[in-house]
Length: 238
Ligand code: IPE
Ligand code: IPE
Ligand code: MG
Image (cartoon, rainbow, N blue to C red; front, side, top):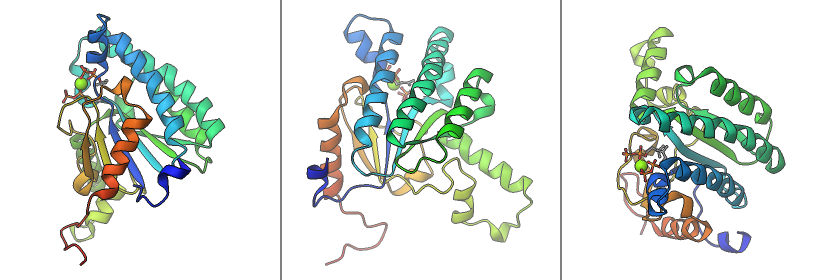
């Protein structure tokens, strides 16, 4: 960690689409939920590992607004895992000075999950280390629509609505945009994750399935990131 980050340009915010749990289970001739359980366990270990890099923000995509389209039993299974893991996450967060945030539509979630999420936010709000944003019942388009509604409700004048103001109405209000956007599990798409915030993120796609995406794979992504030249529409300095 300390050695690794020496002389390498680190991102401030890493966003990860944790994809591939189902295929991970299938390869082992196990039910999909077995993969989700392993994925959740892995997320906990990953957060602990990540907290050693001095990168202030991590956003993890755990359940999308489109994932409700899966069979009810799978959705139920994922939600129970989420409930369990929110509790576990509070413990880890306490030990590692981590702050937990939720990205997504809380109202659309079952009451038990809402309570666990509220508790996790409240219990960790004064922690000053890494901030972990857990995205569940999250969709980028739905986030933009929700922000627009609140701007209208607040009766803002059209002239006052600019990109900065709009950003403050998103779930990520006050959090810098992701610099490095990782998707595990082979697919090369954003699947509605942080579509506003990722406008200038460096994209990194890994074929490794989420439960197998370890420290070595993460450091590979960091190394590649550190070599990317970010221009934001301008010109490289020369
Ligand atoms: C990602 O794994 C986790 C969620 C979407 C909840 P998948 O369940 O999408 O795994 P694959 O893509 O089918 O392998
Ligand atoms: C994206 O994965 C959502 C999460 C990882 C939570 P999906 O597996 O749902 O994405 P698609 O359906 O392949 O685009
Ligand atoms: Mg998938």
